[in-house]
Image 1 (cartoon, rainbow, N blue to C red):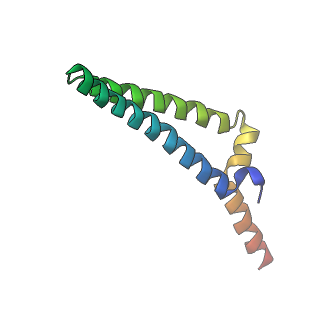
Image 2: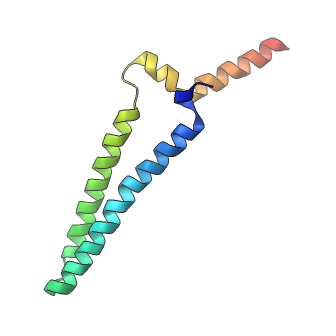
Length: 95
């Protein structure tokens, strides 16, 4: 199996994307709650949630873009299904 298409690589990608969305959202929500308590307002938590989600999605998008193949040849290298199909064809040929 090619190192670039290992399932562990995809697991790391999914975990990193999840954290890059969740962490800013939680931090900005907590900041909004804290500011609301200090200032006596009730709308800063909503702004914090929106900014946290926007920042998290932006960070996740940039992270995913680094892993996306740039051309068709690279896409074929990253295609796990193609690799599994090749493995299946090899086992059929062995029969």
